[in-house]
Length: 412
Image (tube, rainbow, N blue to C red; front, side):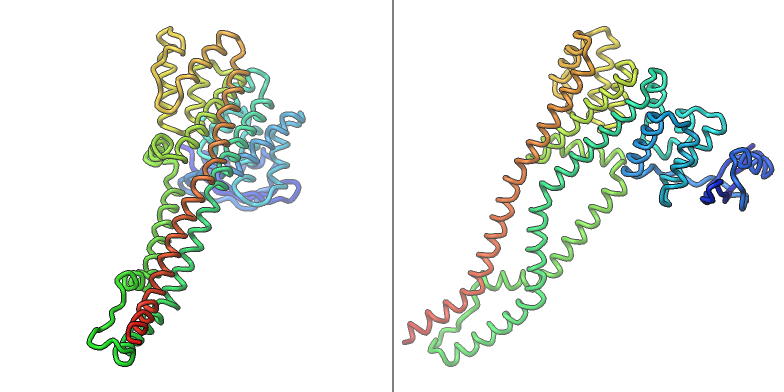
């Protein structure tokens, strides 16, 4: 049974590497490292290998781009990856490059090396590489995948830009409320109470006792407690964002994401169009890479990560397994019926790749158009809400003075 050994070693260039490998014993581990032309600095039993984590989105995008350039240039992969790992800044991406390079030198194929480290890469990445190699089109497959990653990034950035301004306006309003709650409302409340007492004694109210108006008392109560209220909102937002970042890939959060896409106005249709665009683009990558259509659909399901889209894709595969055309598939929850019909038309016309390109571009434009409309809806609503709050605040703070002036006028 193999054991795990940690090591520190250097390349010929002097670049230091560290990691773990499995071997029957320490001598065998040293032999493997030496065969990889590494100068071993330290070698020790490491126990169970640490659980790997996927590469960050930017790291994987950079890895995929560099891999595509290496394949296109004709440079041997193991040599090129080793050089890239030596020149890259410290982090998990250089480790991934070095690990894949070492596995290639040990005799593994590129898909086998990626599959060995599948915890660091997206699902089905090894399958995509294998399909590209079998069709002698690996460089183009990787370029297409890079374009797909760019599409996903652009859609995310567009959504962020659409909601950034309203969020900043509301955040600024909360900051103003926090300041007024700490510095203004307590002094104003004390001042009003003293003025009311003075006015009762000296401003000819007679037997009537002036009272602070109800709306003023309500605003002052909310204002004095505004810091606690704002702190609660910030805490909830931070907890929700932290929960989302930690569990966003878990099934429950993916189902929440689908529910938002299917049911929430304004944002939902935008997310749905973006999902469909990415699904069609991923399906195109699978078709171009040489996968048969059911495998390409499974790849698209995996890439998007949407349970609703995956269910729709499985339904399409079941329809084909029964020998029926896709335009007879039952309507899906996320995929419009027109998508299946258009895919069937592309199959019949022997131009499926071009058809999927048109579909992806069309839904991308739809998503971007909906995103551009969102600020025109969300921003006025946010400004109207803030305007109502400001008017209420000014009116509530001015009303006691207006009542006092009216009392003086009646007394005169």
